[in-house]
Length: 324
Image (cartoon, rainbow, N blue to C red; front, side):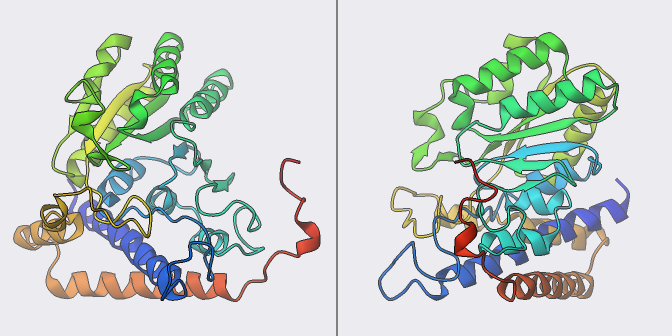
């Protein structure tokens, strides 16, 4: 792999983590001493993706702005990696008029027509719309592909299997990606899924399936590159599962008392692991990594400042831009 690609993968992961660390700080700032999920500048639930950055970086590095992606209720890493404008993303999280959905959708319902990005709070909901986009690309003769991302818990939903079946039948240009972080909220994978790898389920639909172990961003990049090329060439879908890690709670405020792997998970922080690898390879030294962190911190700070200084929606327009 070109060293420039390696550094860019690292930068994408650092940018995502910098954004989410800042959101985390602002989300918790005014919810104490008594926890009130409805209080503060960012009310409501918050699902952050610390640890899952390799999935977004590796997949999206192979996409163009004309390709589409549908994400889960944990969507920020994928939005940022796919090029969604960070100012509009932050503004939507803060519920501001300048947000992607004019402050009406919040962090689980992000839509950006400019980059063909969308997500939903409903489990496995993004897969059928991904097929619709892929079908439209196919019918119009466009070389675009769609990546449909879901979690390992959602891979047990009917919509997952129905979508794989139809995509395979019609040879749609879609790549299915399962983020396996071992936990479907508080249910361990071993208690919810009969097969050791969701990638094995691809065989039932006559399509390729591949599992990436160790949260390896370079391996994600390599596998995604082949799957996206296959889809773009008209050869149909691929199923990829990435064994990733969730460093923080399912949602902010989750005490995670059900987890016995937290210390082990922290030891596998993919950003620290990859920084160490790049240093040993002579691709990125400590000074270079520090510079990337500084640049990303500034970029995030600018986006957050934009969001916080943007106007709140006018209450009189509460029914605008929404289904009534």
